[in-house]
View 1 (cartoon, rainbow, N blue to C red):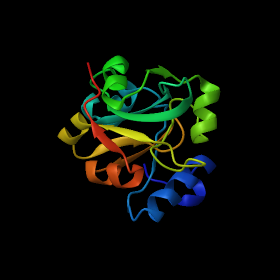
View 2: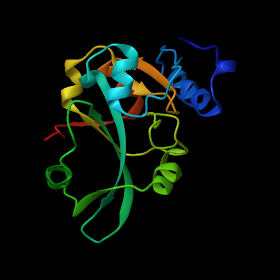
View 3: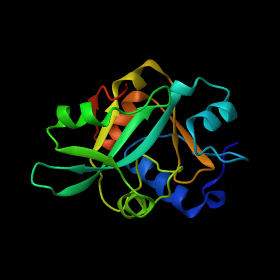
View 4: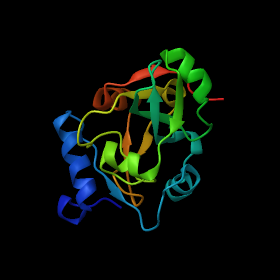
Length: 167
């Protein structure tokens, strides 16, 4: 089900505005039930779980011990190998952000983190395995909203770096 902007939750309206600002013409859809996991989203959309682009927020720690948020957009078909990704990115380590860190970085809650519409840009890694799917389905700012995007659109709206991330 699609929703007119007035029917979208506030967080989703912010995401919709960010998509439009990036030149992406894709409408956020409101789901009747929560899609806060890839399996729930895939079931609701009747698609492969790999087509669900999970938005996972981590804290990236550099070699001097400083931490900053890192958004990893990964296929629902696998988990992020944080050790391998840290080596690839030249980081000391990558650890899962807690709910407060996720909200501070994105303005959104775990289970509904969109790839856009954050208070300030968050460095983003795009899982190259997402290129196997069209469309991709990403969260729309809440666990009840989702939006279809192409792989190219996902890269465009995030300015993301393409990397293998799965184990």
